[in-house]
Amino acid sequence: MGRQHAFSRADIDRPPSSVAGRPDSDDYRPMARMKREGYVKLEAEDAPDWQLDFDKMVGAMDELHALGLPVAYAFVFDEFWTAFWRLHELLNELLGEGYLRLPDLWAWRVDHTTQEAGWSSHRDRRLAPNDTTSERAFGNFIFPDGAPMSATAWIPLTNATTLNGCMYILPADRDPLYGENLMLPTQVEDHMPNFWRDNLQNIRALPVDRGGALVWNQNVFHWGSRASPQATQPRYSISTEFQSGKVPQMSVTKRVEAGLFTYGPTDPRGSLNFPQRLDILADLVKKYHHMHFLSAEGNPMLAQLMNYSMPPDS
Figure 1 (cartoon, helix red, strand yellow):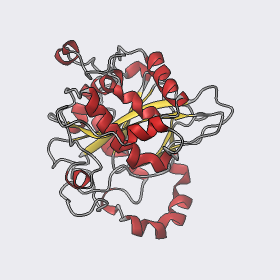
Figure 2 (figure 1 turned 90 degrees about the vertical axis):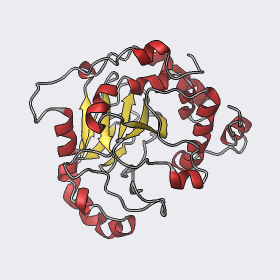
Figure 3 (figure 1 turned 60 degrees about the horizontal axis):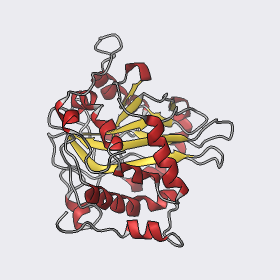
């Protein structure tokens, strides 16, 4: 796998493969589904031609895991960036011309043999688009017409099943705390007992075969489930976040000031060099280490990577 550039000139100049469609009715189009339920699921037969070797990508993640490193370091390789450019047509429809890639990305290897789980229930974003004072400020990231201001794209590199930890979601139109009813984290706790009692039947499993993809808006409530020893393989998946170009840049001001991210939103067609990728990943591993119980103690390679700082002339 190449390391230096996310895309070759041919990748950038060639339009992404089109996304095949279901019946072209207003109710079935991706934007209509996104506005109604907060997510879009692409079945493998409807997804673009990835033109990527998913087996090699999984192999790279396995090698990182064997070294005791977060599998998110697979993003040093071109293929893990190129995959999301293949979703350009869909993201362009959902977020509009001029949408941007955010420096928020991750990768998962959910092991069924140890009954691991994906991330627990959450909404991806709470920082209001125009807020520069509070990192966890209340924010409704939905335009008045229901279109998303930001979205997360999630790609399974192996079949994601109900046994190996597929995603679950509470559809937006079934979520009493969605949209205008979205609450501050401190307010949610008082509502959680009734919230779960009243919404268990509304929860939707989202198994996706390799070759498919999910995109959800960043207000929708979702989580990765726990794998069962009955599964036949781990769940491997990758994600990257994006924002509309019509709103102020996200993941910039407060996070840069706090030293959490060196980079803000970038053109999804652009490439980052190897030092830049390492720099972003070092920041993300520090941010998410508590989600994976990561510790550099006794792992000098991880310690070095987590403390990596890009040379000024890179």
